[in-house]
Length: 153
Image (tube, rainbow, N blue to C red; front, top):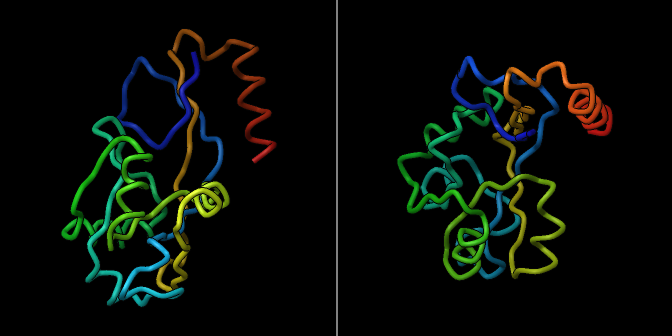
């Protein structure tokens, strides 16, 4: 009854409630031949990358990230709605990927990947919302769950 995710297109049947922001980081394989632990904006723009995307979700990033990713769309080699295949492809190629920062401990522990630092994202976050059918927008249990998530994060 509750969907959690990035901003979606307006739908009068869906009630949304802002939850929190998630930050993003850049990753690549550990043995990437051109990218070390830091990447400049110019070098980032030259590299090909993988992109998570969904036809159901629209961009909900903060301005800095939205601007960079809009410019980067020219260099997207492949996009998918599933993270795992993209992570595996990044692991075995010279591609970069922007991932939610909270994934980093899991990714770095289980895949030969590294985080790439940069200074060109002034804010690297995306707004996350809870969605429910408008008929449920007064459901006490769902509202309590949303309040817990807002407080926790």
